[in-house]
Length: 365
Image 1 (cartoon, rainbow, N blue to C red):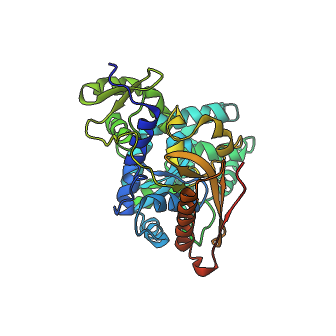
Image 2 (cartoon, one colour):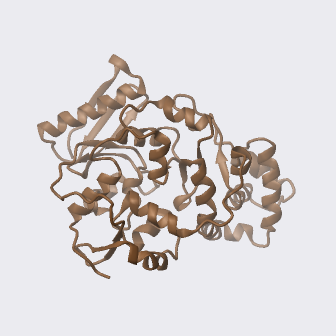
Image 3 (cartoon, rainbow, N blue to C red):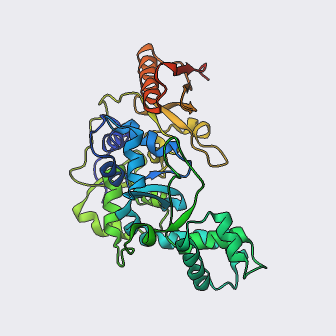
């Protein structure tokens, strides 16, 4: 398969369209979370809330906090081994699909500390402990080390994290409240078992719906799971084929939006750790390579970003709930600066700042 050429700009517009960043949507938050395959959420609580704010009309913090408290959405380790906020149904389906990736990550990071350990027995004991009451990893590791004094407690807790579908319970992740990252099992929290036989086809098709057109390498970058290229090839007869400017093979859903590359793209403020920037092997459709190091730090932080004409053009941050600071990489056109200020004011209203909020622009550079 080859297919028509899609320019980098056209790929960017397609991505923004299906991410609801060309035009906001009035979908229910849970429906959008499902469409996006979850939102990265290891930094609590701001990123998922701000990610939804960028894409939803009429969104307020209470709408997501209520979903968390009602157990309609959960925070759990999924794509790339990172904490994601996903619907309850996706937690039960995606976790067993991504288990091989989590196993490999555990072997890579903690293999030496876990050599010779009975992981099944460890998982069984950990399940009893976290289902008795939610535990932090520090608490869980200390308890597991009680009968394994020669083992590192942190490694024991991380082995339990890998072997069990642990979810973080509220108040962790609630806007304006927060709390320690205490865990129980998904089965105990949701009252349902994991999907016993999830298939990879749905995972692939859902990725394309939210992030396509994309390559097999892009798919792996998003979820961290190897071995999906054959699934893409098997599904190819029902997909559309394209190629990018480097000649790489791309796949997409036939009816997915692919706007003209000159479609206007409004200024947006993307959340920290937004999957828009993390879900392709080649991120240049939205993140120019020269700016990558200013957005993604060596210690794994991904800053909130300013999108101008569909590309990352700066960073931003919300300090407390009273100030938004925008740091453009180059001088903004007056219209773009006004649009960025309007987006920042929207964040301040969302955060409850009222008239006390302030927007500050740092000097470009």
